Image (cartoon, rainbow, N blue to C red; front, side, top):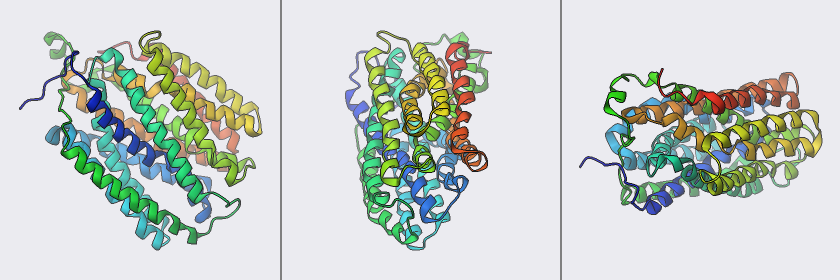
Length: 407
């Protein structure tokens, strides 16, 4: 049966709760990277650049697998694709066990890469699904709801893995401590397999990506996804955003360590960033689109992010850390706003457009590497100056980059 677009009278609560559970899962798996970066840096005696290979291995899969994921979803549909993505993630998490036993950093990176492949399929399916599953003008509100599940999972991952891997280890963590990852990753593997089965046999409906109310003659003039500048510019906006999110979230623990905080103190810093993101998502649910548009929220958030970046550069100690953590609140409108803006009126190109946006997540692979290099070559503080052009571009997109829907 051909899937049909949902109507505005349909109840989306059940499907959104299922998608929310998926966002919780990949939020937990993604945000634990902040602890792994700090943990592996000490366990394997790595430089800042080498430790950020954790983020590189995880996020580079989005670039390599986004287009194949789009092709896969065209064959399997959204629901089966999500189930397959969860099973792929389970393969990656189980690799952590032999990696720990053999004390192999490269094997850990392989596991992270495979987890990223599974997440690529999940992200390629779930983000446009949430955008399509209801009126587009409230899409940012729905994605904000899903973002809350994502960030709550991130906070939980910091409590569980931060407490397990970093507590009481103020100076050096030996390679023998790698055994600590075995039990939690065995449990995580089991959870992913169970969720894959639940999704596969759930009543999650298929929806059509061609639901946009676009005149036929308007679609007829587009024979390529590259003819939508709101999408092309949106991909670059997400590239900048994910890189900035990883730098402010995953690398803030290492930053705290570099400026003199102990592991017991620094292990909480990513949680502060996540609380900021969570607060921003909650505010978005309450105010978008009732009191403020998606575009305006994006614009004001980037102005605040630029101010906080300057604050992080000119202050020291916990004040500098706090400025970085508060960027979580400032950047919270980006992900929910860019998706509906970038996918607006793409019609039959929506799945491919979603894949291209997922490729933008590679900013989380490449920009932290640059940040790590600048940390080693110049200073941990000045490495955060990299955020200024990133936020500047997203501000440009918020002001003008999304307005055109055709060249």
